[in-house]
Length: 472
Ligand SMILES: *Cc1c(COP(=O)(O)O)cnc(C)c1O
Image (cartoon, rainbow, N blue to C red; front, side):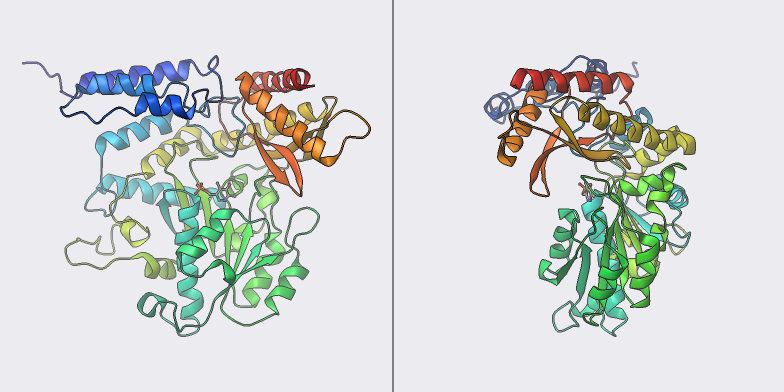
């Protein structure tokens, strides 16, 4: 009798396709080439009346998505803040699917619960967060905001004698939210989901470096005495600005406010001895959101929430039912900390990535990507007709491209910038995104992938130069 399992042919095909994909990253175009119509034509098959052989489904899927994938797993993808996957994390992610644990309770996924418990403690240590802080492995930073801000909502209303979990928001003291004016849009979504509403937001004006100053925060806090949440930022998307936490957090705390930090990628600066100072004082805050799927280079579906006041966090998230056997105060049940009930055991890839990298590998990942970002920004900025706009204190920055001629207007420079970005992306050699920053079109440079090396940087600068020539 053979040991062959019915799954083997399809999984073997998937494995072979996966390796072939990774092996092609150096030569394949970085930007997708397939049109919307082509993808709809390929994938938009009628749903079959009868089953298909699983290996054929896999082969068809690979053929049908051809040209419709971003080369973000490779070293010359500099668009948005995406990141790739380190091998141990990809492998652990595959196993997570195969094991298919329901990581809601220790009882439903014992090893999954413990892997999260261990990885959560490692992360708190890496980020210098308080040992007593609670945490949750969620889908992304936006859901980490929801989780942290639900805890914040609980705590600031509890302090005014209002039980929001029982009574809801209506009729309670209105919460005001003071937030960095350059905050990421996911903060606003979290406020909407939590019923606080974006009208609760008071944007905090920024200094020339994109940071909230103590004077601005003090003045905003003095404007009222409603329950207050202050939202600061570690790593702004375009310039990687960090708020001066060491100055700001004590001011907010003295006013009784809860301080939340969006550290989607910037919190990882803490893992590098040479960049740590950027996030100085961030550990003084009350809650922190970050991503595993960006800078840690684990596959998507990985956000991380940390909360100093574990009781507030638990009060906001826990579910008490009799049919679910609780960990009894001994085991850690993710369900006490997560917004989901049934959920993927997404702690495994984080655990595996951290083990593969270790402290020095993680510091090196941060330092290397920052150095490559700097080299890219400087390399492109030095090209005739290009201009460096910001960066890079971390792994993000901006450049733009200038239209020729003495009479060129800002609008001409904007058009030129978009044209060069489009030409680079069309070349397939590298991918960058565009952004309107302080009223001007710019090209964003984001280096978040562990694979990016000096050759990728040189190839990308050459591709930018070629695109500038081709479009001039
Ligand atoms: C990407 C990002 C987010 C949102 O994270 P998701 O993982 O996409 O939910 C929030 N803040 C910043 C600064 C980001 O870069």
